[in-house]
Length: 346
Image (cartoon, rainbow, N blue to C red; front, top):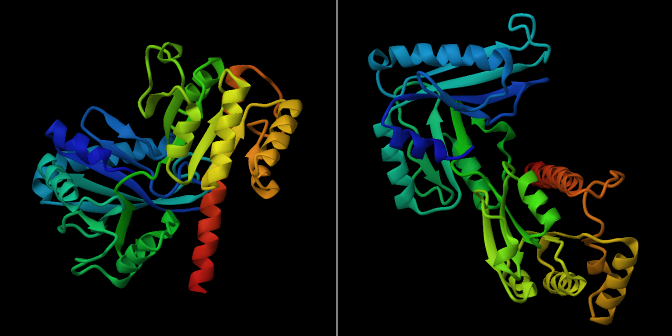
């Protein structure tokens, strides 16, 4: 769920069909908000694969063929039962929005978004044809003819409430313009650090990779990863934004301890984990207490990292275990936010 597709479409200079999952019930191949952008010969993104995606591609390409005669901002909503009719065993039901977007339309929206200069932008449009897709900012200063439900989503965003499981409101489809990505600080560019960077490719984390020596990094750094060479990695920890995720695996126990102390002294983190044996954890706990860190804060330090009960010390195993653990934690964060939303609207 990102406006990258609009930038790509504007650059390609051609009309495309955007296919979005706007509702899902029961077992379905992908979640609400999943989308793909379809051209005559290729497509990007996915709505879950299988027969559903194949049928959606066929429908999208029929719309591409008819686009010149269909008029501006043509939209079509179709229901797909995922049972015998599609030959899928999911047994659920999805609703798809098909939307034709020209390169000129995409460029105009991208320009509007640049002028708005806001982090939490929405892309909103009615499900009926004719009206353009438009970006809206969370301050909802200009909502025009948007219905009450759209304005409620804007108010929720302004209060920090984000629940995209039910944003198909009153004949409108609303989605965040930008993916919500987490900030992760990874300390150590050794074998395990490299495996972690590899395992996190494609996950919603922007990684700041901290080490003391530039020569320790591989030649190719993946997209979404930024090197941070620092003689004292604890300084990077002190400069990290609040809510960051910190993963500590430097070549030195002394560096690991200094980073952990810096993160715990701040206290405003989503996660702090360090590669550690039972002995290393106990030693760190004792030294942190001596340094004045409270027990309740020390208890937030995860050591060892990864999924509990998954054995294996190979770098790839540690990295995959850590990635899976982070996805569970992200899911729990979303559940907690939805619980707050329900309490606030009861």
